[in-house]
Length: 112
Image (cartoon, rainbow, N blue to C red; front, top):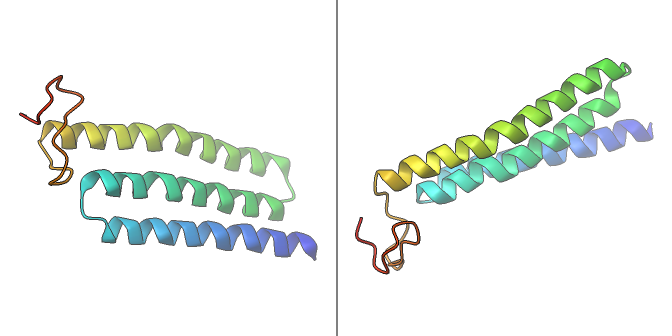
Protein backbone atom coordinates (compact mmCIF):
# COMPACT_ATOMS: atom_id res chain seq x y z
CA UNK A 1 0.00 0.00 0.00
CA UNK A 2 2.80 2.43 0.89
CA UNK A 3 4.65 1.64 -2.35
CA UNK A 4 1.62 2.74 -4.40
CA UNK A 5 1.43 6.05 -2.56
CA UNK A 6 5.14 6.67 -2.95
CA UNK A 7 5.02 5.73 -6.62
CA UNK A 8 2.04 8.01 -7.18
CA UNK A 9 3.78 10.88 -5.42
CA UNK A 10 6.85 10.58 -7.64
CA UNK A 11 4.81 10.25 -10.81
CA UNK A 12 2.57 13.21 -10.04
CA UNK A 13 5.57 15.33 -9.03
CA UNK A 14 7.31 14.45 -12.29
CA UNK A 15 4.21 15.20 -14.33
CA UNK A 16 3.87 18.59 -12.62
CA UNK A 17 7.48 19.43 -13.42
CA UNK A 18 6.93 18.43 -17.05
CA UNK A 19 3.84 20.66 -17.10
CA UNK A 20 5.90 23.48 -15.60
CA UNK A 21 8.43 23.02 -18.40
CA UNK A 22 5.64 23.27 -20.98
CA UNK A 23 4.39 26.51 -19.41
CA UNK A 24 7.96 27.84 -19.43
CA UNK A 25 8.31 27.08 -23.13
CA UNK A 26 5.11 28.96 -23.78
CA UNK A 27 5.64 31.94 -21.48
CA UNK A 28 9.35 32.79 -21.74
CA UNK A 29 10.19 35.45 -24.27
CA UNK A 30 13.60 34.51 -25.66
CA UNK A 31 15.32 31.41 -26.89
CA UNK A 32 17.80 31.20 -24.02
CA UNK A 33 15.12 31.18 -21.33
CA UNK A 34 13.09 28.66 -23.33
CA UNK A 35 16.20 26.52 -23.67
CA UNK A 36 16.46 26.42 -19.88
CA UNK A 37 12.77 25.54 -19.51
CA UNK A 38 13.07 22.74 -22.04
CA UNK A 39 15.96 21.00 -20.31
CA UNK A 40 16.00 21.43 -16.54
CA UNK A 41 12.44 20.78 -15.32
CA UNK A 42 11.62 18.33 -18.10
CA UNK A 43 14.67 16.18 -17.28
CA UNK A 44 13.96 16.23 -13.55
CA UNK A 45 10.32 15.44 -14.27
CA UNK A 46 11.34 12.41 -16.32
CA UNK A 47 13.61 11.21 -13.52
CA UNK A 48 10.78 11.45 -11.00
CA UNK A 49 8.37 9.62 -13.31
CA UNK A 50 10.93 6.86 -13.89
CA UNK A 51 11.50 6.51 -10.13
CA UNK A 52 7.77 6.21 -9.60
CA UNK A 53 7.43 3.69 -12.40
CA UNK A 54 10.32 1.60 -11.10
CA UNK A 55 8.49 1.18 -7.78
CA UNK A 56 5.63 -0.45 -9.68
CA UNK A 57 7.78 -2.88 -11.66
CA UNK A 58 8.50 -6.33 -10.28
CA UNK A 59 11.25 -7.24 -12.73
CA UNK A 60 14.70 -5.73 -12.21
CA UNK A 61 15.42 -5.85 -15.95
CA UNK A 62 12.60 -3.39 -16.60
CA UNK A 63 14.01 -1.00 -14.02
CA UNK A 64 17.40 -1.20 -15.73
CA UNK A 65 15.74 -0.23 -19.02
CA UNK A 66 14.13 2.75 -17.34
CA UNK A 67 17.50 3.72 -15.88
CA UNK A 68 18.92 3.61 -19.41
CA UNK A 69 16.21 6.05 -20.52
CA UNK A 70 17.29 8.46 -17.77
CA UNK A 71 20.97 8.15 -18.74
CA UNK A 72 20.18 8.85 -22.39
CA UNK A 73 18.07 11.86 -21.39
CA UNK A 74 20.95 13.24 -19.32
CA UNK A 75 23.24 12.92 -22.35
CA UNK A 76 20.90 14.30 -25.01
CA UNK A 77 19.24 17.21 -23.18
CA UNK A 78 22.43 19.23 -22.48
CA UNK A 79 23.81 18.54 -25.95
CA UNK A 80 20.57 19.65 -27.57
CA UNK A 81 20.40 22.76 -25.40
CA UNK A 82 24.00 23.61 -26.24
CA UNK A 83 23.32 23.30 -29.96
CA UNK A 84 20.19 25.44 -29.72
CA UNK A 85 22.08 28.11 -27.76
CA UNK A 86 24.95 28.03 -30.21
CA UNK A 87 22.62 28.38 -33.20
CA UNK A 88 20.79 31.25 -31.50
CA UNK A 89 24.06 33.02 -30.70
CA UNK A 90 25.34 32.63 -34.24
CA UNK A 91 22.09 33.92 -35.72
CA UNK A 92 22.35 37.07 -33.55
CA UNK A 93 19.33 36.50 -31.32
CA UNK A 94 18.98 39.35 -28.86
CA UNK A 95 19.08 38.26 -25.22
CA UNK A 96 17.72 41.48 -23.75
CA UNK A 97 17.87 45.21 -24.41
CA UNK A 98 19.97 45.90 -21.32
CA UNK A 99 22.81 43.47 -22.04
CA UNK A 100 25.68 45.11 -23.88
CA UNK A 101 28.58 42.78 -23.05
CA UNK A 102 29.35 39.85 -25.29
CA UNK A 103 31.87 37.66 -23.48
CA UNK A 104 32.25 35.30 -26.42
CA UNK A 105 33.36 37.89 -28.97
CA UNK A 106 36.14 39.44 -26.87
CA UNK A 107 34.69 42.95 -27.27
CA UNK A 108 33.26 44.98 -24.42
CA UNK A 109 30.29 46.11 -26.52
CA UNK A 110 28.03 43.77 -28.43
CA UNK A 111 29.17 44.29 -32.03
CA UNK A 112 28.01 41.07 -33.64
